[in-house]
Image (cartoon, rainbow, N blue to C red):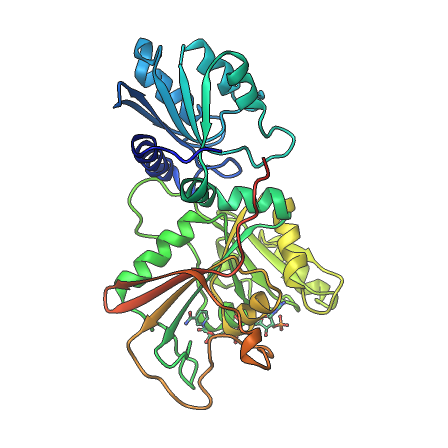
Length: 376
Ligand SMILES: NC(=O)c1ccc[n+]([C@@H]2O[C@H](COP(=O)([O-])OP(=O)(O)OC[C@H]3O[C@@H](n4cnc5c(N)ncnc54)[C@H](OP(=O)(O)O)[C@@H]3O)[C@@H](O)[C@H]2O)c1
């Protein structure tokens, strides 16, 4: 592991920006970006656009052409050494005559970790692996991929919108819209960034949402929709069920879900996943989603489901929109249902906190669970 110099760090930052061009479209692959430097000058860029398409290093090598000989390749992730849907990158890097490689982070998959770097070094290429902040940011770029492979569950982002006094709806259940148009636009971007969006049946019944990503510039891969619904109460006439043949809907039901309801929803194209408990358990649902290749889930509430995710210690990161309004009232629901904690020392606390203004609203972002480490 190496503390990178300013030029390498700037190039790696650029490579991460490039990787984000394909956000929301690369799963089950990781986001990867790469640049090529020659005499300290950036001469080529590339990123991975999605499964079956060329990897970032190959795109950058193609853009550099013969200029790649003797140059430095800077990539956010260790070049792969194995044949997947596309040929391996490390041999292509060697063949192109690259003299030096800077890597943002090691391959998170244990079975292949370090093999790309080993091949490069064997071929006489000088390889530097980032440490510290640069390594952390490079891992963060692929947090969904890392969490899925290391923890066997999708990466979970909890998004909620509350009034300043922490209410998600009024006492009559009205919650659309607590935040302004800019915040709602950002939520569509968050949906597009995830493999799936999850809500509880309370929200599905109250709001009849589509949970699709709308109004986003550029190509969008729509997230699958997940509803926690113990008794299969989702109406076949709901927007979710009606769209199930176009964009997948997974309905997590409990052991006592009536089979006529289940069959009716299945006939409408909904994939019903049954769990042996009365209520589908959050970790069990996440494991079932991970098995279906879902690497990231955006949880959009409501209060009961959000509380269950926090109580199960399965929220990796939080995006909390605060509207400068006061709803008040004992009957208006707070943001997190369930039992909560008994004393302040047990309260979940956000790390890496950032606070930004989004239109008239405030967005608090932070992390509840550390990213898994990638051991050398
Ligand atoms: N401001 C916001 O950000 C925001 C976001 C979303 C919703 N909302 C508002 O919140 C309200 C709905 O919230 P809500 O708390 O009543 O409903 P919810 O959290 O959407 O759904 C809760 C229901 O999900 C089912 N469920 C199944 N498995 C569960 C599990 N493991 N843990 C928890 N629940 C599980 C339960 O019903 P069964 O056991 O019967 O299946 C439970 O009653 C609506 O008014 C909506 O508009 C606001």
